[in-house]
Structure formats: C-alpha cells, structure tokens
Length: 277
Ligand SMILES: CCCCCCCC/C=C\CC(=O)SCCNC(=O)CCNC(=O)[C@H](O)C(C)(C)COP(=O)(O)OP(=O)(O)OC[C@H]1O[C@@H](n2cnc3c(N)ncnc32)[C@H](O)[C@@H]1OP(=O)(O)O
Image (tube, rainbow, N blue to C red; front, side, top):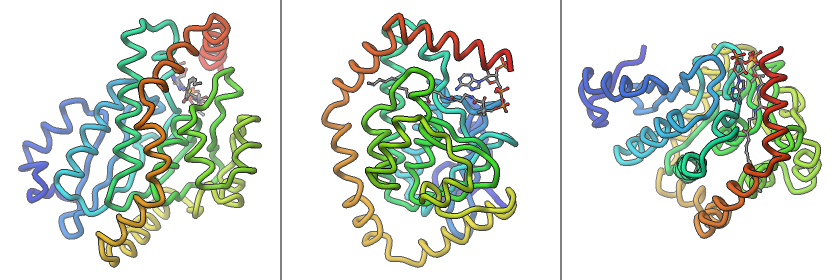
C-alpha cells in the first residue's frame, strides 16, 4: 500500500533506503497519493530514546519539513511499547559532554516535532511512559490501543519532568489535573487517559489505530494548510519560546540534577529493578 514517494526528495527508492539505512532506527513510509508520512520508531525492544534514535528522528523531521510533507503519523514497530521514554543509560553515569549532547538533541527533536507545521498524530501502539508520553503529547492528536500505560512518571523514578514536559501536559489536560499527575508521577491506563483527555481516542487494536490515525489525517488535509498551521503555532508558541529562550539554563538544570549522587542512586536502583523483572 505504501510506496516511497520520489517527489519528496527523500529521493529515489534506493536513496530512501539509504536514508533509512543510515541508522535503521526510524522507518519512514510515504503515501504516494497523500504525501502523509508514517514515522515508525524502530529501536527494539522498547524504543528507549538515546542520542542516536533522537538524532535519527530529528534528521527525519528536518527533512519532512523541508520537503513539505503533508502530515505525519508517529508510531512504533514494537508490539508492546510506543516508547519507554529517555534511555536511562544516557543519564546513568554519563560524562558531562555526553549528557550535554544528549540533552541538546532531545531539545532539538522536541522543538521540531512540537512546531511541525503539518498535522501530526501519535498512533500509540503500546506503553508510553515519561519521554514516550512527551513524544505523544507533542503531536496534535493522540490515539491509543487499550490496556497500556501513558504518563509522566518521572517523580516515581526520583527525577523531575522538565518544565517543557510539564507545559505540554498542562496544555492538554489543564493545570489542576497536570499538577496532580506530575506530583504523583501517574501512569494512566489507556482508558483513564481517554477520560481525562490525555489521549483523544481509543482504538481497539493496531489496525484500528492506524485507520483512525488516517481518518484524522484526512480531515486535516481538507483544511487550508497555512490557516491550520498558523493557528497551531499560535497555540504552541509560548510553550516553545519558553524552552527556546532558555535552552542553556534548561541544559544546566539537567546536568546539575542528574549528577547528584542521590539521583544516580535512584537511577541505578530503577535500572536494576527493570533488569530483574
Ligand atoms: C530539573 C530538571 C531535571 C531533569 C531531570 C531528568 C529529566 C528526565 C526526563 C524524562 C525521563 C525519562 O523519560 S526516564 C525513562 C522513564 N521510563 C520508564 O520509566 C519506563 C521503563 N520501562 C518500562 O516500564 C518497561 O520497559 C515498559 C513498560 C516500557 C516495557 O515493558 P516490557 O516488559 O515490554 O519490557 P522490559 O521492561 O522487559 O524492557 C526490555 C528491556 O529494555 C530495557 N529498558 C526499558 N526501559 C528502558 C529505558 N527507559 N531506558 C533504557 N532501557 C530500558 C529493560 O531494562 C530491558 O532490558 P534487558 O532486556 O537488558 O533486561
């Protein structure tokens, strides 16, 4: 059904293959008729967001914007997880340089995704904690399969969701609900997330998920693109500018925070618990 579209200079079939093969961490499929792109995160087993995956996503997002893609559906190739959030190994005993580079790429990727002029939908085919929830919240519309978990659970790990993560949640579910969820580090079931508006729609399974994502995209493609994107950016600019104007401070907070011995201890315990499961 999907073919590689040459007019988006993602190129000829072989150059697209090269583009994807540069990492293989992100699969990009383009519908020839509509110009809608499916970006599938492909870092088994759980799409933890390390520098390389973020860089692959960022590179793809830059390309999609430059080539005027008409819409993007973000999903994952994992059967159980959309994204497990930030790769904990990027925060556990890194060097300062490595941590700084990682955080910079996370900021770059979020800015590109949150400000994408084309419609974006998260087809959440599995668990989506922490940074995974951030990715989903950065899209315009969220659809999720049943019986999975989503939320900003950072507090439960002894870390803190940065201000811009918190802002994204506040913009979707409102200040009161966000404050409660962030303090507790709540992971909502898909069904609970639908109730509070963290996700927009529930799907029955992956097939239904992708159908619903395409239905949303079709509606959006019927709207005048410039008017659509102007309204979108109008809503998002304060949140974006808050980070854009304080990237260095935000990076310093991150570095100072994760290098605290107590935080390293929490990360170590959490990593061990994950391995023991
Ligand atoms: C003031 C400003 C301060 C700023 C401070 C820091 C800000 C940080 C911001 C965001 C933080 C994050 O995003 S932290 C990541 C949080 N993520 C989680 O809590 C999820 C952890 N993972 C899970 O709960 C589960 O893995 C899952 C529900 C997502 C999937 O479960 P499943 O049973 O399918 O898979 P496993 O648990 O067996 O995992 C498989 C494999 O993957 C490893 N793994 C899982 N998650 C991560 C991760 N986030 N990073 C690195 N590695 C991860 C897990 O250990 C298993 O490894 P092994 O196969 O080697 O055992």
